[in-house]
Each structure stands twice: as C-alpha cells, then as structure tokens.
Length: 461
Ligand code: PLP
View 1 (cartoon, protein in one colour):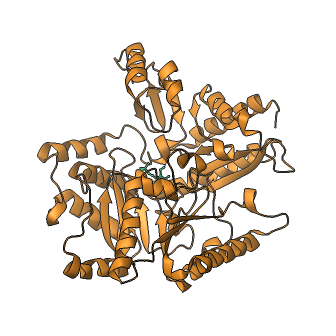
View 2: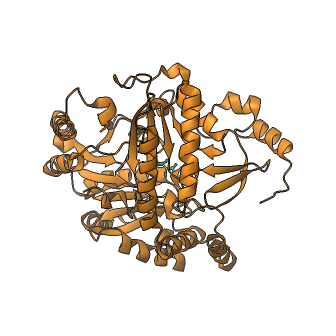
View 3: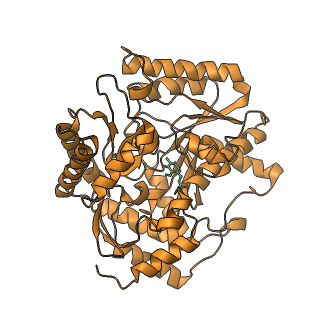
C-alpha cells in the first residue's frame, strides 16, 4: 500500500491551513497533524510515511465493514457517474434513496413509520429534536419542549446536539447547553453507584430521579429523552441491569418520547443489528449514521414511529411543507454506499462475526487485564469495549486528570502499532475495531494495550 505523497509538504500545509475538529489548535499549528492516514485495508491503516497501524477504533467508531472496500467505492462511482446529485426537496427522489429506505425499514422495528436522511449523527439528532418540537406544536402542546439527556452522553456538536451531549468541554465557551436541555445522572455504575448498591438498585434510583425531574419540571413541559444504548464517547458505559426496563415506564407514564441514539451501536457494533436488539429498548425515534456507510460517505438515517409520522402527515393540511431538510438529504452516492455496505455486512455475516469476535475480545481483555492493579473495570459488549484506568483499584480512585494517563497509554499503544482511543474525561481507553477484525488482530491489540498500560503505570499485571 505504497503512496506517492510528499509527507513533509502535507504536514506543513495542514499546519498552516486547517482548523481541526476536536483537536488542540495550537498543537496542530505548532507541530503539524497527529497523523496523516493515506490508505487502509481490513482493520489496518497506513500513514503517509508508510507506517501500518492496526486501527482498533474503526476511524471514529464507524468503519464497520473495514477499510479499502472496492465494492463500496464501485457503487459510489456508479451513482456519481450516472447522476452525481439531485435534491430530494419538494417531493423529489432518486432510485438509491428509495432502495435504501426500503432496506432500512426492513431492518428497524416495525413500530417505525418513516426514515429521514441527513449527513451526520449530529444533524440526525438535531432533526429528531426539531421533529419532536414540531409534532408537539401540531398536537396543540407547544410548551412540551424540554429534552432530557444524561451526563457523559454524546449526541453531536451542533448547537442543539452539543447541548444534549453531557460532556462539559462541549459546552464551555459556547454558552451551552440550551435552556431546554436537562441532564440526568449517567447510568455509570462504576462512577455513580453508592457503596453496596446493586445494579438493579442503581437503575431504580435513576428511574426515580427521572420521575422526580419530570414532575418537578412539569410533565406538560417535558417532550423527550435521548439515550445511547451503550454510551460511546462518555466512556463505553453499558446500561446497568434493569435500566431501560426501569426508565421506559416512567417516560410512557408522562408522555415523554424516547429517542435511541444508535449512531455508534447501530449496524452490528454490539453483535446485533442495533443496540436495541441487545437491550430491551422500544424507542419512538431512532438516530443512525456512522456504520450505515461504514464512514465511506457522510450519511445519516433518522426513524420516526408510525404515530409521529401520522402527526407529521396530517400536519401538512395546516402547515403545508415540512420546512426542514438539507441539500444532501438522500444523496444518491451516499445511499449507494450504504446499500453496498449493508450488502457486505449481510453477505459476510459481519453482525454474527462481531458477536463472536467481540466475545473473544472481552474474554482476552478480562483474562489479561481484569486483575491489573491499574485497571478498574472492563466495559462494553460485542466489538465495543473500554478499559478503565485507576490509580487505586480497591478505592476505584482514578489518576489525577492532569497526568493525562489515558492519553499516554494511547500514545504508548500507538508506538506498538495499534490505535486505541483515549477518553480523557473518564480516564479510559476505548476500542471499536472494524467488524472484520480477526482473532489474531485482537491478540495484537490486547498485547499492545497491556504492554502500554504496564509501561505508563510502571507496574506489571
Ligand atoms: N451520536 C453518537 C452516539 C455519537 O457517538 C456521535 C459521534 O461520535 C454522534 C451522535 C454525532 O455524529 P457526527 O459526528 O456524525 O455528527
């Protein structure tokens, strides 16, 4: 996988021209980009200097079908060559978006009535938030607008979705969150359970907090709750036992919609098609993106229940057009990429493979790291995992954040040829490799991560 780029010239041009997302601007300006990835195959990427790296993160939790899939590229080239683009406003359509919609409606629960296409996880959640407000307006309850989210949640970075995101760094300096958004306790048993509290008791306490919050705010003002099945960027936090069973009756009792943010969990990540197939979640709306195209094209698909769809349809009588949408909604090239990607996932049985390799990953992580003096917890499910670093295992005390331990472990893992993602707010290392990752690659990942943790924390397991 050789390339012909001039690496030094690229580094210079990047440092002088790009404001990078979620990056320390001064660092990139002074030192150039952290890496320039030029090619990839399967679970391996190659940087512009020719260094191969096992990408145990799958880009940003999204390259489910793996890198370098010519079949997806060919499908995109065909759609681009035939048409390239046409809009989907004013009732216009294209064959690719129709075929994709048909395919997706067969994958999501039959409680869903329609799909809305966008370009990113953020615009998908933003759209669903607007639909919630619009539907309540149409129903004559426009004051029902408040949205519940959880601390440590990640739902995007637009003005509305950064507000839903429950990480302080996405609010500071931006004057966020919006006043409509209320954050609840994260379902993070490791951090938030009280001593001696069982998972079920913790879940019951969070359901009681939810009920009290809705009553305090006034149920007539609370519209919806957004929730990732497993929280991704907030720490790969799987719900404690009984969590979704406990919170959903509370939402139902107060007429509050549940939005499942499946942007990370969707399309096989947990070893099931969606997170809601791994946990008992019955949402009114679903947000998906990332794994929909394995990241090959920016595409999102948001789903609304029949009930919500019927309100929208009937609302046309008074409102006329549904005045929301994006230039690239239902983009034929993106929809072709998604169709090819889903065909690969189905043909190669990648959802079952993710369950199998995911179980192997968790077994290896547990066998190698569960007793490590500086590992407090191993979390996740399927091919989504995180290792929690701790200074003191017995007391569950994390390292001083100024030490940036997760960042150092990630750098030491990269030095061993493997990419894992540091989550500094929870001092954890996250993994979400392509679903095609092999057992041999999992062995390499766990070996590199363990050696890196030993090196940084200065102690052997
Ligand atoms: N929702 C979840 C659960 C995510 O993890 C992300 C991104 O990581 C988003 C939404 C936002 O997606 P995007 O970055 O495509 O806007």
